[in-house]
Image (tube, rainbow, N blue to C red; front, side, top):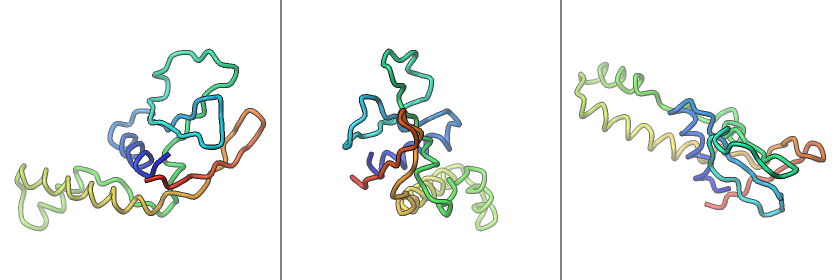
Length: 128
Protein backbone atom coordinates (compact mmCIF):
# COMPACT_ATOMS: atom_id res chain seq x y z
CA UNK A 1 0.00 0.00 0.00
CA UNK A 2 1.16 3.52 -0.51
CA UNK A 3 1.29 6.25 2.09
CA UNK A 4 -1.32 8.02 -0.05
CA UNK A 5 -3.57 4.94 0.29
CA UNK A 6 -3.32 5.15 4.08
CA UNK A 7 -3.98 8.91 4.15
CA UNK A 8 -6.93 8.61 1.75
CA UNK A 9 -8.49 5.75 3.72
CA UNK A 10 -7.97 7.53 7.03
CA UNK A 11 -9.55 10.69 5.67
CA UNK A 12 -12.51 8.71 4.31
CA UNK A 13 -13.13 7.15 7.73
CA UNK A 14 -12.91 10.51 9.47
CA UNK A 15 -15.07 12.41 6.97
CA UNK A 16 -17.79 9.89 6.28
CA UNK A 17 -17.98 7.65 9.32
CA UNK A 18 -18.33 4.75 6.86
CA UNK A 19 -16.41 1.51 7.43
CA UNK A 20 -13.59 2.30 5.01
CA UNK A 21 -10.73 -0.19 5.15
CA UNK A 22 -7.64 -1.19 3.27
CA UNK A 23 -8.50 -4.64 1.93
CA UNK A 24 -6.02 -7.44 1.27
CA UNK A 25 -7.58 -10.10 -0.95
CA UNK A 26 -6.41 -13.72 -1.06
CA UNK A 27 -4.39 -15.42 -2.28
CA UNK A 28 -1.93 -13.60 -0.05
CA UNK A 29 1.62 -13.13 -1.25
CA UNK A 30 4.65 -11.17 -0.11
CA UNK A 31 4.29 -8.11 -2.33
CA UNK A 32 0.53 -7.73 -1.89
CA UNK A 33 -0.96 -4.25 -2.03
CA UNK A 34 -3.99 -3.38 0.07
CA UNK A 35 -6.75 -1.47 -1.73
CA UNK A 36 -9.22 1.11 -0.48
CA UNK A 37 -12.57 -0.52 0.15
CA UNK A 38 -15.88 0.00 1.99
CA UNK A 39 -16.26 -2.96 4.35
CA UNK A 40 -19.42 -4.95 3.65
CA UNK A 41 -19.74 -3.50 0.15
CA UNK A 42 -18.40 -6.59 -1.58
CA UNK A 43 -21.19 -9.04 -0.76
CA UNK A 44 -20.10 -12.62 -0.21
CA UNK A 45 -16.63 -13.94 -0.91
CA UNK A 46 -16.21 -17.24 -2.75
CA UNK A 47 -12.69 -18.16 -1.60
CA UNK A 48 -11.62 -20.47 1.21
CA UNK A 49 -10.05 -17.57 3.09
CA UNK A 50 -11.74 -14.22 3.67
CA UNK A 51 -10.05 -10.96 2.72
CA UNK A 52 -8.27 -9.06 5.51
CA UNK A 53 -9.72 -5.65 6.27
CA UNK A 54 -7.33 -3.17 7.87
CA UNK A 55 -8.77 -0.21 9.71
CA UNK A 56 -6.59 2.68 8.49
CA UNK A 57 -6.42 4.04 12.06
CA UNK A 58 -4.23 1.00 12.88
CA UNK A 59 -1.72 2.16 10.28
CA UNK A 60 -0.76 5.41 12.02
CA UNK A 61 0.88 5.86 15.40
CA UNK A 62 -0.84 7.23 18.50
CA UNK A 63 0.72 10.67 17.96
CA UNK A 64 -0.90 11.16 14.55
CA UNK A 65 -2.74 14.47 14.33
CA UNK A 66 -6.53 14.43 14.47
CA UNK A 67 -8.46 15.19 11.30
CA UNK A 68 -9.50 18.86 11.33
CA UNK A 69 -13.19 19.36 12.01
CA UNK A 70 -15.14 21.96 10.03
CA UNK A 71 -16.56 23.45 13.24
CA UNK A 72 -13.07 23.89 14.72
CA UNK A 73 -11.99 25.77 11.60
CA UNK A 74 -15.06 27.99 11.93
CA UNK A 75 -14.38 28.68 15.62
CA UNK A 76 -10.76 29.70 14.91
CA UNK A 77 -11.86 31.93 12.04
CA UNK A 78 -14.48 33.69 14.14
CA UNK A 79 -11.98 34.23 16.97
CA UNK A 80 -9.39 35.71 14.59
CA UNK A 81 -11.22 37.93 12.16
CA UNK A 82 -14.89 37.22 11.85
CA UNK A 83 -16.75 34.73 9.72
CA UNK A 84 -17.38 34.49 5.99
CA UNK A 85 -18.43 31.38 4.09
CA UNK A 86 -15.69 31.81 1.48
CA UNK A 87 -12.95 32.25 4.06
CA UNK A 88 -14.29 29.30 6.08
CA UNK A 89 -14.05 27.01 3.04
CA UNK A 90 -10.57 28.24 2.14
CA UNK A 91 -9.29 27.87 5.70
CA UNK A 92 -10.71 24.39 6.05
CA UNK A 93 -9.14 23.27 2.76
CA UNK A 94 -5.80 24.58 4.08
CA UNK A 95 -6.29 22.76 7.41
CA UNK A 96 -7.01 19.47 5.62
CA UNK A 97 -3.95 19.88 3.38
CA UNK A 98 -1.75 20.51 6.45
CA UNK A 99 -3.26 17.42 8.11
CA UNK A 100 -2.59 15.27 5.02
CA UNK A 101 1.03 16.39 4.94
CA UNK A 102 1.52 15.89 8.70
CA UNK A 103 -0.16 12.49 9.04
CA UNK A 104 2.12 10.98 6.38
CA UNK A 105 5.02 10.97 8.84
CA UNK A 106 2.95 8.98 11.36
CA UNK A 107 2.40 5.85 9.22
CA UNK A 108 3.70 2.83 11.15
CA UNK A 109 6.36 0.43 9.88
CA UNK A 110 4.42 -2.77 10.59
CA UNK A 111 1.28 -4.18 12.17
CA UNK A 112 0.19 -7.63 13.33
CA UNK A 113 -2.99 -9.03 11.78
CA UNK A 114 -5.02 -12.16 12.39
CA UNK A 115 -4.31 -14.44 9.45
CA UNK A 116 -5.50 -17.97 8.63
CA UNK A 117 -2.36 -19.50 10.20
CA UNK A 118 -2.47 -17.24 13.25
CA UNK A 119 -1.07 -13.76 13.94
CA UNK A 120 1.13 -12.45 11.15
CA UNK A 121 3.27 -9.32 11.03
CA UNK A 122 2.79 -7.19 7.93
CA UNK A 123 5.45 -4.68 7.00
CA UNK A 124 4.02 -1.42 5.73
CA UNK A 125 6.08 -0.26 2.76
CA UNK A 126 6.27 3.41 1.90
CA UNK A 127 5.64 3.13 -1.82
CA UNK A 128 4.68 6.73 -2.34
